[in-house]
Image (cartoon, rainbow, N blue to C red):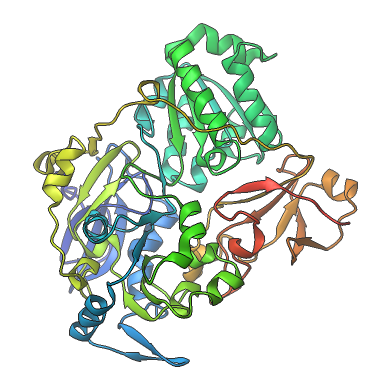
Length: 520
């Protein structure tokens, strides 16, 4: 990252120094310029020379860098549970507590904001390293997102980058401006639908069938001809929603078949990690085995009330920004630095990017609480990346992995069929965003959304009951027929307009969609 501040400041505010960094809010890995006065952030801009963000900077990135550090709700001291209350503990006592309790069977859970340092510490202490980031044993994408712009045809399936990697959407828009043929199939009418020349608003089941039909050369539509004609000048973009569903095996096999048969590039958008971790599904199924849990983020949003109650006898360590449901049910809560408050390697969209520390860290880094050693440089070499090159190269360095055509896809097809589908997925505001007034305002309240036709057909009133939980209903005609959509970013301990966590809504909360049976 050799980005340097622009010769002419982008801000009109008074500042003493300007520092450049890379945002770790998502895999877009956009460069930014932070303007500081007395070591306090006074303004923030996307860096115009950065090849990933090209000067743009989204609301989410601004919130995570600018708002979290000064949020009065932020946890700033280690807290140890004593009965029904917590007491503050100092750094050395916290280290001692961690050392004493890293015994028996230990599991780590790492969210997307965990650093490589924490990943390496976890690997050194246990084989039980889990994440809600989806690990794929092949490249997330065969091309950089910037290369979408020059494709003649884009085929998009249940994917809206705005809800995961905001700035990736710009490359689809730019492809549209260059008159690319864009085909989209999915359950929500979003930005990519707006830019598509052919579109199918339908259930996830039908979307998967369309993807398979294209692969087999039997889709009755212009998309089939464009895929066959443009072949290598095409890209197939799939959202991780379909990989967090019963259709995962079918989708991966079909994606590989399309790449092999037509030579098309592929991209999978969403919360993906290139580093081997065990799945959220396995974490939820094996929770009861462990004596100590070391948790980064808020994984208890995936748990049922019964599962949470069963954890009372375990020693639970939570590195947290805010007093979430996970923090409130933990034994030891430790404040967590943001990616801007530390030197950070961002897991980009098929690449890694290095960011120097931009803001002062108000407390120790997470890895400083552990006595384990790690070597980031050696680990990066395993990924085909040199640390020195990573620090110097604009836009990051591509990860050395096989692409999907070079690996065997042995996953079973567990596809399900149903008339009505329940989708619990991302929107503009992530779970972390609901702790900040600015991003919370993007979606203040949790609703169950259906279109008017589905509401009338099923005789749904003002409330709907999903797996024993009642939610207010709101009509949204940007949804496909036979779909009920609920944002997955709410939970019960959020400060402004708390909602219902996914662990209470979904029968299988490691999925983002399932067949829904309503008693109406």
